[in-house]
Amino acid sequence: MVGTELICISQAPSTCPQTQINSLSDNHGLTYSLNDQVSYNIRDSLMLLYTKGQEYITYYNVLGQIALDSGLITRKTLASYYNFAIDVQKASTMLMRGQSNDVPVTRSFKSNAIRFIENFRAIINDPLIEDILDEIERDLIEFEGLTVTQILSKL
Image (tube, rainbow, N blue to C red; front, side):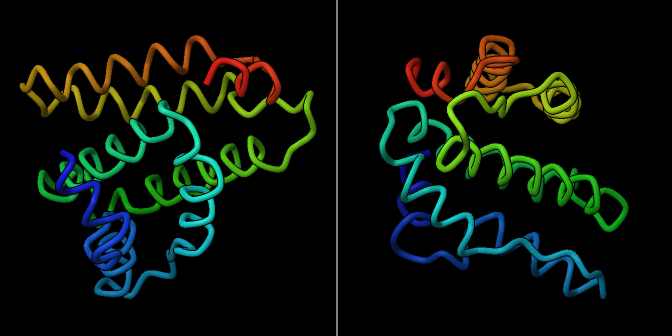
């Protein structure tokens, strides 16, 4: 996991799942494209500052690669992955720049994220990946309904 994380973070951003999703979109003539710079800003200005954020960088890389390699991200599912990625970017940006009483992890955000977790659980039989999915689900439960200030104090 660390190798993938380091490659994505500093050495070759073109190997990041986000770039691969954009490539998949381009290859199928779809209009979905994630803004790499927004993601890098979230990584540099939020995720790298907290241990939990650093863990999530690894989770993103590992799960993104699994989604691509296993066929979870296809032309048919690309829109839902894209929309969820945009939701994640919005929640992350809220943590960075939002008002102290904004709520980044809403009930609908958590429900949507859990649907993706369930998709991974359906294809994965790896205890390490199961641990990652369990951790994300616990965080969603813990952070749902909390304000920016409350979440940041727990990171």
